[in-house]
Every structure is written in C-alpha cells, then in structure tokens.
Length: 311
Image 1 (cartoon, rainbow, N blue to C red):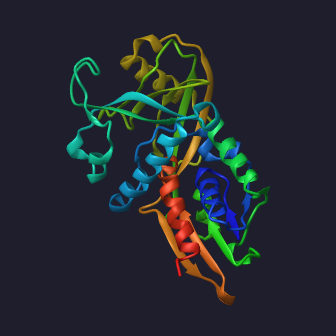
Image 2 (cartoon, helix red, strand yellow):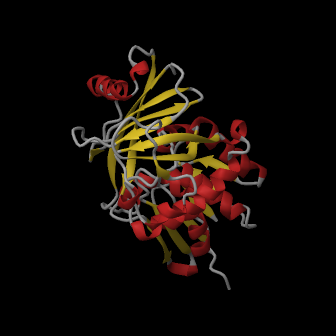
Image 3 (cartoon, helix red, strand yellow):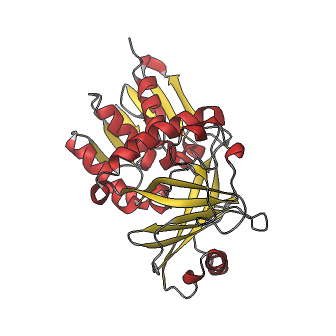
C-alpha cells in the first residue's frame, strides 16, 4: 500500500499502518522539513477544524499518545508544558474539554485578569518530531520516497491513503479544501517557560507565545484564501507588538527567523473510504485545518481502519 503525503498526518498514518503489520510505502512531494507541518507552532489544541462532534475523540486519542511520547522529549520532540488560554471559557468548548485532566479555570496568579484556562498540554517541536516519525518508519521497514503524485487513481497499489493536505485541492480535485495562511516570528527566548494564547476581538486572529527549544515562537495570523508563503515584514512587526503587549520581556528580543504555512482548512475533515475500479481502495485523510498535529493519531487510526476494516 502507499500513503501519499509526508506531513504529520501522512507520516503518523504510515506509522500506525506499518505497526499493524502492513507493508507501507510513503510518497511525498517534498521532504517533511518543507511541509506545512514543519512550520506549525504545534501546541495540542483543536483549532480551525470540523466537525466538532468527531474532533474531540480524535484529539483525545492523540493527547494520550503525546503524553506517552513526552517521557522522551529529546527524541520525540514532545514536551508537556504549562500555559494559559486567555479569553477562553470552559463552557465555550465541546464535551471533550471535560476529559482533559489538566484543563481548568486559571487562578489570578496564572493570568492577570479576565477569563482564562490553565492547562499542561503537549507542545511539540516539529523540527524533532517529524524526523522522529520518519525514523520510526524506517525502523518498521517503510520506504519514504520523495515522489510527486498527479493522479491518485493511477498509484500502483491495492490500497492508497491520501494525506496530501492542501494538495488535495488539485489532486482529488476538491475545491472545498483551501488555504488559511499563518505567519510566525521566531525570536530569542528571554526566559519564558510557559505558553500563552490570547483571543482578542480587536485583532483578526489569536496571539500566541510558544517556548520551543530553538527559540520563542510568536504568532499569528489566519488569512483565508491567501496563498502567499512570503513573510510580510509589517505583519511580523504587528505579531511581535501583540505578543510584547502580553509578555513585555519579548520587546527587543532578537529575531531569529520568520515562518509561513498554509493550513489546509475544510468545512469538515475528509476521512472516508472510496472504492476504485479493480477492487482497489482509496482512503482520504485530509482537511485538518490548524489542528493536524492535534488529531494526527486519532485520524491515523481511523484511516487505518478504513483501509483494512476488521473482518
């Protein structure tokens, strides 16, 4: 079988399939380090993803895996880090929130004022996690090949799993999947050890600060139907300004780099099985919006079950 796509969804799906004893090949248009997944700030949290009725279960399954992987942070890139979701209330979240053990209203000492939620959640360093996934595949005997696919139905395999993200727009084709552009700034960390997200109606998107091993990741934007992958200096300045308003020690921190990624947003994740001529099977697993990392393991298990239903 072939998994098409080498981002976090494709690699995780391939890991699940391979470790269930399937012979798997991964075909990816570009190396994992050049995918949208590599740009992600990667805090576990369901963001810009539907349908809510299913996302909660996928997210919780993935949370359990990341909590295990956090035992080896240097290898897996997964750490459990404390932080605050400012401007978020428990009653604004789905039923899944009640099953996140550490999630609770923040105390005054954890957030200065207003409504906020405190949690200890997985924060994933994608520069370590993606290579770890790839190494796990290699250990399982999976070949990861940089190879462009122009026709899913022409892939020579009895089972094909489509994990192409935004690429599905042209490849399927599926015009329902579209880009939501996210821009980040990486600065030197002045000593911040907790993450922070803040929802402010004045701004077009949330503001967040994620302490990663390689620097402090500042965000962000959510620009719908914007295909530009070039960093905008004006937007970068505004991101730093917003973050410094929340954490003043960020002001003056040296800029280390800029990142831009295009989230593959869809009205609902497409996770379904399609029968092809000749008895072949095509499974779709794409459209995870801003929560690919958050739901990766849950969706991978569903995709594996669709590819090889239990007898």
